[in-house]
Length: 312
Ligand SMILES: [Zn+2]
Image (tube, rainbow, N blue to C red; front, side):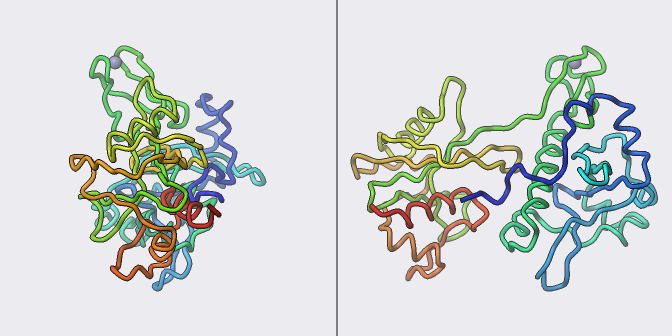
């Protein structure tokens, strides 16, 4: 099973060449350059009214200039392996996209990545590319100023680095590792509802990896903290970048030797055991109480499917 938002974007990131400003400027100035635009972290796409299809809406250099969007902070996403065309991402605001001359004609529709992934109408390489662009744009947004001296930072290496003008401190795109685990006893699985979740949605438990943790330790520590179970047999199943704002989801299965839950209500509103058939009903959207799970684009969905489809 492969998660939806993976690393394969179909573009060559040219990581050995992107520190060369002339190379980047050459790509930016070429006739075949292409830009994707994000407004408040949501991509502009080509779609029909019913959203039965969706793809990235690519813009030319002239269109970007006509819309008044600046390219000096454009993020280099890679080159097309066939044509060599440079592909870049430009971030703007929804307010600008809806009000500025020319932009308001071209920057539409703007669709949230979660909806695009849930609809399943965009090609996986394009979803991955948008996910990567959003993750980088979020990181840029959160690193306007130098964490060391407070000076302003600017985009280097096509947006894969930022450097402080004053003290020359450099920072690199950050990802936050998160463990997400299907804790089960072979027949039943622990699922939790958090305050921030939509009504009746349950999911696997999860938590940030802390300094000093390895993946197994993080799974054991977080599971103990959240539901009071000391799990064993931690198995890393899959990993998925998740650009909200820039996480790396590390999906694991873990075995619970006991079924006594001690739910930490400061961490989760509710957590309980669900049988395999109940979890299958939830996956299918047919639970009698209307309980449901995150969509097929998520790591939680992949892990719960794996549990449901496993023979105990
Ligand atoms: Zn500095």
